[in-house]
Image (cartoon, rainbow, N blue to C red; front, side, top):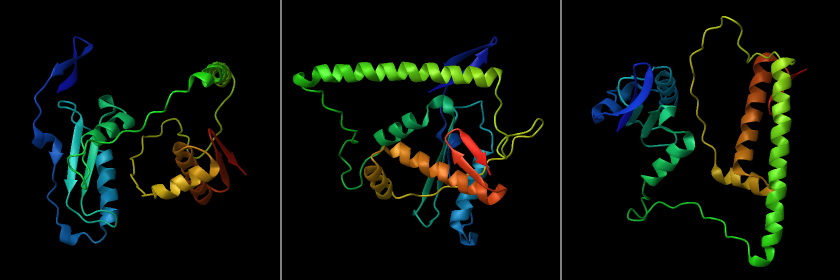
Length: 228
């Protein structure tokens, strides 16, 4: 495994040896005294998120907790530095390293690729791709213009989420919720959208309700928070 270090002011990657016991953590907990396992997991992950990683060794940890919650018999909590990969690549690595309990010998399944258009529809496909590129270029120019306006003349709307000068970085609180993927697909199919659109809408609705309950009447739109 490789680790990034700074030598003579320049960052470089060097090979390092990995001690599994430094990265795989099995905490010695008194499970009999844990009254609310779900709350304990949220507190544990919040504390883990607020603890800086040891920069002298590879930046990943795996915590194994043999505790039964309302959704699982036991838990594995991973903590990875973003330099190792983004969320999509790390999830892909996890899936590639996993096997099905129903068929342990089967290889991991991957998303099906789209079939290429037939020859008689190829011309329309090229027209569609050309129009798509025009839209991308136009949208990029508009967003760049809006960014320059914001940078030079406009100011962000003041909301309770904005930090003030001199504010310290607050500790992070990790709260998780499990959502039925069947329900997500039901909304996706009925509204003719993607899974990401449904999840983004859920996040926006949750943030809007939180702001309204805590700070007053707020309505949240993509990139905008309106106060009544």
